[in-house]
Image (cartoon, rainbow, N blue to C red; front, top):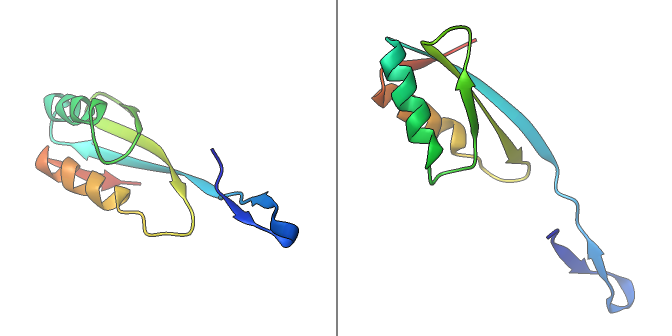
Length: 91
């Protein structure tokens, strides 16, 4: 449901929130590390993300939607999780 605010005459007006698609790729030391990272994201409580193998079995691409207007810690949390699985962000 979209948030609303009271406009003129006491009527509610819809407030559209802008979203941005974010994609981050990670390289891992091994295919097993990449698979463990993917498995961790299946039940990840931080954000809803889509993760898939990328350019081989030892790298993973993660996509998610960021709602503009606030601080987004998702990228930082992903970096930390990847590091725990011997991964690092790539271009």
